[in-house]
Length: 139
Image (cartoon, rainbow, N blue to C red):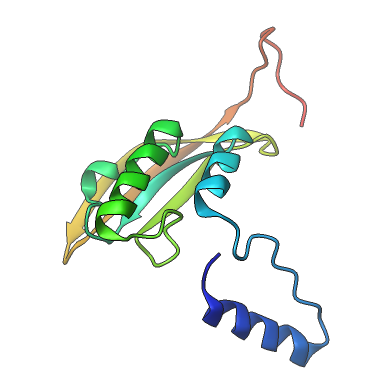
């Protein structure tokens, strides 16, 4: 999103292979992007942390409006990238409007060490999506 190095590398590779580089998220405001993700119905959880201000207590938490407020405060205090672009955190999408089924992590364990923490999914399940009338959602 913000890395000139990554954008330049991808652009060079595209140029060398005759493909046009299209990067709609590059340089997009990170706070706006996170808000757009939440508003669009994407349900993502934090599965890895690796920055000051972020520890094992964030594992498994959903990126929602409350989390965005917390990430903004951590950004202000420690300078971490709001979207985790420097490896500050990683996410996993459990559900979105284009998922045919939602994903549930049924069993997991947290592993921490050397300033990083990771949620390791041991068992996952696909869950049928139900609309407000009790019918399966068609995607």
